[in-house]
Image (cartoon, rainbow, N blue to C red; front, top):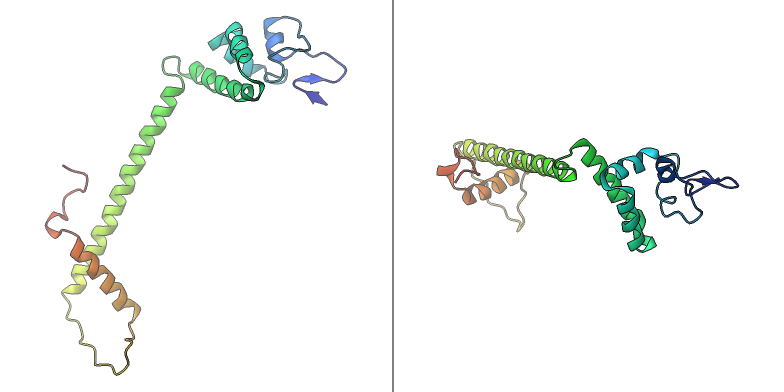
Length: 171
């Protein structure tokens, strides 16, 4: 059974101590966060931050915060190895650009839907509408198509027709 990268009964050094070629003490600050079977985690963190700085950071934190700090350091170190200039900021910027592009595409699709609905309404408004016969009951029986036409007609009054051909995003 493993306990923080160590097997019971034997002293297997953690990934940090193995990389630093030192004896892994029982109270090693790295052992719970850098197990022996994940040497790449400490290697990238050591390459970017340095073992001494990581040790200082972990010592300054409360134990319940250390796991999150190590996860953040591993993420940042891996991002720095991939992109030495921007690191994780480059990845975040790329994701923000993707979100902006997708928002623009969504807005264009929504505008296209509105324009299609408006063209349906204007096409149906040119056809003569039958006059309903007077009803003796207080509630009217409305067909689904007349309900849809009424809701689209109500939307037609809200939209400004002269500007329908222009983009909603142009100034």
